[in-house]
Length: 134
View 1 (cartoon, rainbow, N blue to C red):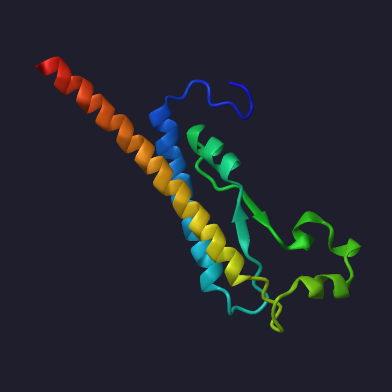
View 2: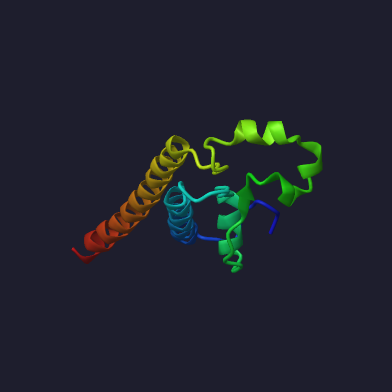
């Protein structure tokens, strides 16, 4: 299987995996929102495509992105003033509620879309079976 390819997976597996990934992403976003008042909290962000690929490959771990520069070995390149300009509150919490709520709405839309497609596939299957039984 090529990297980034979904060859070898049926569409039901992909849709169910996408729904599970969206559910995990929803929990992650909810955690970011819940920690909006936690000092020095940096929100995490899921890489949806990498997480879905890992889930389909049987490695059910979330691929996360973070806004903490020191995790990338870049802290020495950023001045304190630069870091403070990115902080939204005096307690150095980097959660932007508007951004997180927008991410949650987008994620909810994804989940709903995947669920509707999967439901429609099952409905079409049921319709074919019913027509054959006549």
